[in-house]
Image (cartoon, rainbow, N blue to C red; front, side, top):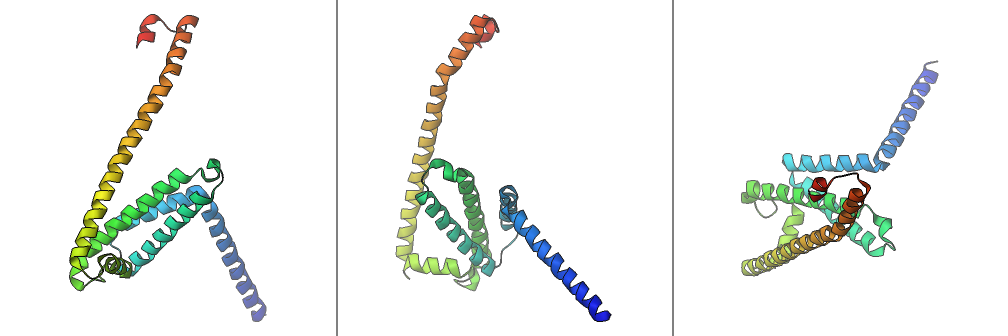
Length: 194
Protein backbone atom coordinates (compact mmCIF):
# COMPACT_ATOMS: atom_id res chain seq x y z
CA UNK A 1 0.00 0.00 0.00
CA UNK A 2 2.86 2.41 0.75
CA UNK A 3 4.39 1.68 -2.67
CA UNK A 4 1.13 2.65 -4.34
CA UNK A 5 0.90 5.81 -2.26
CA UNK A 6 4.53 6.71 -3.04
CA UNK A 7 3.92 6.10 -6.75
CA UNK A 8 0.80 8.27 -6.66
CA UNK A 9 2.63 11.09 -4.88
CA UNK A 10 5.53 10.81 -7.32
CA UNK A 11 3.26 10.97 -10.36
CA UNK A 12 1.36 13.89 -8.82
CA UNK A 13 4.65 15.77 -8.33
CA UNK A 14 5.68 15.03 -11.92
CA UNK A 15 2.29 16.21 -13.19
CA UNK A 16 2.56 19.41 -11.14
CA UNK A 17 6.10 19.99 -12.44
CA UNK A 18 4.97 19.41 -16.04
CA UNK A 19 2.02 21.74 -15.58
CA UNK A 20 4.17 24.43 -14.04
CA UNK A 21 6.73 24.13 -16.85
CA UNK A 22 3.92 24.37 -19.41
CA UNK A 23 2.53 27.39 -17.57
CA UNK A 24 5.97 29.02 -17.59
CA UNK A 25 6.32 28.44 -21.34
CA UNK A 26 2.84 29.93 -21.97
CA UNK A 27 3.74 32.83 -19.68
CA UNK A 28 6.94 33.60 -21.60
CA UNK A 29 5.25 33.30 -25.00
CA UNK A 30 3.09 36.30 -24.20
CA UNK A 31 5.01 39.23 -25.64
CA UNK A 32 3.78 41.87 -23.22
CA UNK A 33 4.82 39.88 -20.16
CA UNK A 34 8.18 38.95 -21.68
CA UNK A 35 8.76 42.64 -22.45
CA UNK A 36 7.89 43.64 -18.89
CA UNK A 37 10.23 40.99 -17.49
CA UNK A 38 12.99 42.22 -19.81
CA UNK A 39 12.57 45.80 -18.63
CA UNK A 40 12.59 44.61 -15.00
CA UNK A 41 15.82 42.69 -15.67
CA UNK A 42 17.35 45.84 -17.16
CA UNK A 43 16.40 47.77 -14.02
CA UNK A 44 17.98 45.08 -11.85
CA UNK A 45 21.21 45.33 -13.87
CA UNK A 46 21.14 49.11 -13.40
CA UNK A 47 20.62 48.97 -9.64
CA UNK A 48 22.42 45.85 -8.43
CA UNK A 49 26.20 45.39 -8.66
CA UNK A 50 26.96 42.61 -11.13
CA UNK A 51 29.60 39.92 -10.67
CA UNK A 52 32.01 39.67 -13.64
CA UNK A 53 30.78 36.24 -14.82
CA UNK A 54 27.16 37.47 -14.91
CA UNK A 55 28.25 40.53 -16.88
CA UNK A 56 30.05 38.24 -19.35
CA UNK A 57 26.88 36.19 -19.83
CA UNK A 58 24.71 39.29 -20.27
CA UNK A 59 27.18 40.83 -22.74
CA UNK A 60 27.14 37.60 -24.77
CA UNK A 61 23.32 37.61 -24.71
CA UNK A 62 23.33 41.25 -25.83
CA UNK A 63 25.65 40.48 -28.75
CA UNK A 64 23.53 37.49 -29.78
CA UNK A 65 20.36 39.60 -29.48
CA UNK A 66 21.92 42.32 -31.66
CA UNK A 67 22.93 39.85 -34.37
CA UNK A 68 19.45 38.32 -34.23
CA UNK A 69 17.82 41.74 -34.68
CA UNK A 70 20.17 42.54 -37.58
CA UNK A 71 19.49 39.24 -39.35
CA UNK A 72 15.74 39.61 -38.85
CA UNK A 73 15.78 43.15 -40.23
CA UNK A 74 17.86 42.09 -43.24
CA UNK A 75 15.74 39.12 -44.24
CA UNK A 76 12.18 40.40 -43.88
CA UNK A 77 10.23 40.88 -47.09
CA UNK A 78 7.72 43.47 -45.93
CA UNK A 79 7.63 46.19 -43.33
CA UNK A 80 4.74 44.64 -41.44
CA UNK A 81 6.62 41.37 -40.87
CA UNK A 82 8.71 43.06 -38.18
CA UNK A 83 6.32 45.71 -36.91
CA UNK A 84 7.76 45.45 -33.39
CA UNK A 85 11.16 46.65 -34.61
CA UNK A 86 11.11 50.07 -32.87
CA UNK A 87 10.16 48.52 -29.53
CA UNK A 88 12.75 45.75 -29.85
CA UNK A 89 15.38 48.30 -30.82
CA UNK A 90 14.51 50.46 -27.82
CA UNK A 91 14.74 47.53 -25.39
CA UNK A 92 18.03 46.38 -26.94
CA UNK A 93 19.43 49.89 -26.56
CA UNK A 94 18.28 50.03 -22.94
CA UNK A 95 19.93 46.66 -22.32
CA UNK A 96 23.21 47.85 -23.82
CA UNK A 97 23.12 51.07 -21.81
CA UNK A 98 22.50 49.19 -18.57
CA UNK A 99 25.36 46.80 -19.38
CA UNK A 100 27.54 49.83 -20.12
CA UNK A 101 26.75 51.24 -16.70
CA UNK A 102 27.32 47.90 -14.97
CA UNK A 103 30.67 47.38 -16.71
CA UNK A 104 31.76 50.94 -15.90
CA UNK A 105 30.83 50.35 -12.26
CA UNK A 106 32.91 47.14 -12.23
CA UNK A 107 35.90 48.78 -13.91
CA UNK A 108 35.90 51.73 -11.52
CA UNK A 109 35.34 49.60 -8.41
CA UNK A 110 37.61 46.65 -9.24
CA UNK A 111 40.07 48.03 -11.78
CA UNK A 112 42.95 47.68 -9.34
CA UNK A 113 42.54 43.87 -9.49
CA UNK A 114 43.76 43.61 -13.09
CA UNK A 115 42.45 43.54 -16.62
CA UNK A 116 39.85 40.85 -15.94
CA UNK A 117 38.13 42.85 -13.18
CA UNK A 118 35.11 43.57 -15.40
CA UNK A 119 34.94 40.12 -16.98
CA UNK A 120 36.63 38.19 -19.74
CA UNK A 121 34.53 39.62 -22.58
CA UNK A 122 35.61 43.20 -21.87
CA UNK A 123 39.21 42.08 -21.36
CA UNK A 124 39.24 40.23 -24.70
CA UNK A 125 37.65 43.15 -26.53
CA UNK A 126 40.13 45.59 -24.97
CA UNK A 127 43.08 43.42 -25.99
CA UNK A 128 41.68 43.11 -29.51
CA UNK A 129 41.10 46.85 -29.96
CA UNK A 130 44.31 48.04 -28.33
CA UNK A 131 46.54 45.38 -29.81
CA UNK A 132 48.72 45.56 -26.71
CA UNK A 133 49.68 49.19 -27.39
CA UNK A 134 48.28 52.04 -25.30
CA UNK A 135 48.80 54.68 -28.02
CA UNK A 136 46.86 52.64 -30.57
CA UNK A 137 44.06 52.26 -28.02
CA UNK A 138 43.89 56.03 -27.51
CA UNK A 139 43.79 56.67 -31.26
CA UNK A 140 41.02 54.09 -31.78
CA UNK A 141 39.11 55.59 -28.84
CA UNK A 142 39.38 59.10 -30.33
CA UNK A 143 38.15 57.84 -33.70
CA UNK A 144 35.20 56.02 -32.10
CA UNK A 145 34.22 59.08 -30.06
CA UNK A 146 34.36 61.29 -33.16
CA UNK A 147 32.32 58.86 -35.27
CA UNK A 148 29.71 58.45 -32.51
CA UNK A 149 29.43 62.22 -32.08
CA UNK A 150 28.96 62.77 -35.81
CA UNK A 151 26.42 59.94 -36.12
CA UNK A 152 24.40 61.17 -33.14
CA UNK A 153 24.49 64.78 -34.34
CA UNK A 154 23.46 63.89 -37.89
CA UNK A 155 20.80 61.48 -36.62
CA UNK A 156 19.31 64.11 -34.32
CA UNK A 157 19.25 66.64 -37.15
CA UNK A 158 17.56 64.15 -39.45
CA UNK A 159 14.96 63.28 -36.81
CA UNK A 160 14.18 66.99 -36.38
CA UNK A 161 13.83 67.40 -40.17
CA UNK A 162 11.45 64.45 -40.44
CA UNK A 163 9.35 65.69 -37.49
CA UNK A 164 9.12 69.15 -39.07
CA UNK A 165 8.15 67.60 -42.40
CA UNK A 166 5.34 65.58 -40.82
CA UNK A 167 4.10 68.69 -39.01
CA UNK A 168 4.12 70.73 -42.23
CA UNK A 169 2.42 67.96 -44.20
CA UNK A 170 -0.39 67.77 -41.63
CA UNK A 171 -1.13 71.53 -41.68
CA UNK A 172 -3.23 71.71 -44.89
CA UNK A 173 -5.46 68.90 -43.63
CA UNK A 174 -6.00 70.70 -40.33
CA UNK A 175 -6.77 73.95 -42.14
CA UNK A 176 -9.31 72.23 -44.37
CA UNK A 177 -10.97 70.64 -41.32
CA UNK A 178 -11.22 74.05 -39.61
CA UNK A 179 -12.69 75.61 -42.78
CA UNK A 180 -15.24 72.79 -43.04
CA UNK A 181 -16.26 73.20 -39.38
CA UNK A 182 -16.56 76.97 -39.85
CA UNK A 183 -18.71 76.53 -42.99
CA UNK A 184 -20.94 74.02 -41.20
CA UNK A 185 -21.40 76.42 -38.30
CA UNK A 186 -19.87 74.08 -35.74
CA UNK A 187 -17.35 76.74 -34.65
CA UNK A 188 -17.28 80.53 -34.78
CA UNK A 189 -14.60 82.77 -36.32
CA UNK A 190 -12.77 83.37 -33.02
CA UNK A 191 -12.42 79.63 -32.41
CA UNK A 192 -11.25 79.11 -35.99
CA UNK A 193 -8.50 81.72 -35.55
CA UNK A 194 -7.14 80.05 -32.43
